[in-house]
Amino acid sequence: MTIDTKTIDTQKIDARVRNYDPNRMILLSDFEIPQLDRRRIVRIYLPADYNTSSKHYPVIYMHDGQNVFEPELCISGMSWQAAEHLDSLQAHGEIDGAIIVAVDNSPLQNGLGRMNEYSPWPCNTVSELDDWNIKRTLGGEGEAYGTFIAETLKPYIDLHYRTRAEREFSTVAGSSMGGLISLYIALNYQHIFANAGVFSPAFWFTEASLTHFIRHTSYDTPLSPIL
Image (cartoon, rainbow, N blue to C red; front, side, top):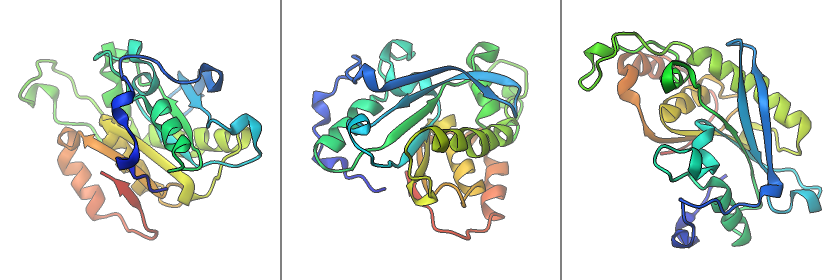
């Protein structure tokens, strides 16, 4: 799925205000992550014509679900406004609709739990990083989290919603640590995801391990990274 956002007037979308259709937002408030023995909120936003058509749609799986739709849940007070932008793209005929599936990040360790889940490898001890004083190692749960996205969440979504389940129509996307785990999932599950949105990725978190992983990963199928 290729999107040309140049035709969309993003100035009309205020990231501080919720502008999406609440009737198309589905909240799964207690979704199990069996690989990590945890439960999480999963937010699903359906295309404008989902309930009036029989079409099947591409799916975009996003991390940091609190930031994807709801400005009041974001630290900055401004969300991705993903629902509004996809609605605008569909209304302008740029896309034929897409389903967004956003998984909330971990609330553990006062928010640092997202670093555990969004990196398959531990980082250097945090005390070795320039701007951190917390003396603990973070990261290392990303492999289990990636398995959850690919082998638990995606099959559930494909079963319960009208999706185009083929890899060509499956995208994983995120920013910062979410960008790091998106790249990992896309490379580790190339047979499932053909597209990756890797925005402002936190490659610094575990640069050596990530570089080794990329260099030793075979590319059997083409990927469409969105950087």
